[in-house]
Image (cartoon, rainbow, N blue to C red):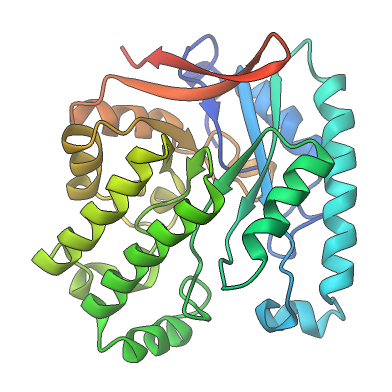
Length: 301
C-alpha cells in the first residue's frame, strides 16, 4: 500500500486509468465510493475512473461471468448504474478531489462497436475514453496463458502476434479516438521476457501504432500494474517508452489500473522515478476547466 505522504501535494498525483470496482467488474473488489475515498486518502488531486465498457456480444463474456449467470443485458445495465453512481460521486467529492468520468473500451471487433462506444459516451455524459486492446482477432490475450498461447499460435508465434497486436492498437485508435491509450505492451503479461522482445518487425509495428497515437493526440498510459505483476517495470517497457517519448513526442500520464481500493496509488511514485530515469520530465493529464475537458502538464521534478 502506498503511503499518503508519497503523493500528497504532488502535481503529478493523478491517475487516468483505474477505478474498477467490485460492483461493476467481476474481477475487482470494493465499492466505487471506497475507491474514490482511497484516492483522497492517498493524495491524488485528480482521479479518472474508467470502468470496463459493456461488451456487446455474448462471445466476449468471460467464463466466470457465464458461470455467475451474467449476460450482455446484465452487463449493459450494470454500466448504466455505474455511469449514474459515478456522476453522483463526482459531485459529492468535488471539494476534495477531481473525479473524471471515463470508461475503458477494450473490444474492437468489426461492425458497430465504435459507434456504440461513442453513443454511450454522449448519452451518459462521460468525460473521456481509455482505449485498450485485450482481444486480438477474437482471442483474449490477457486472461490465461492458454488463451495467449492460442493467439500466438494463430499468428505464427510471439512475433507475429505482437505485430498483429500493434496493428489492432492502431485500428482501435482510429476507430475510437480515445484520449488515453491503455497499457501499450500488455503482451508482456503472458509473453514474458523469453519471447516477447523488441525485434525489428515488432519495432516497425509499434512505430506504426505510435504514429497513429501521435496523430490523434492521445496520451499514453504509464500503467503501474506491471509492477504489481512482478514484471520489473510498468507498461510500457523501456524501449517502447523511449520510442514514444523521444521519437514521437507522445505524452504520458499515470494509470494505477486499480481493481479495488487497495490498489489505488500503487506504484505511482515508482512510475515517476521510471519516467525520470528515461528522460521524461512531465506528465499530461485531463481536468475540467470552465465546464469542459482540458489538458494540463505537471512537472515530475
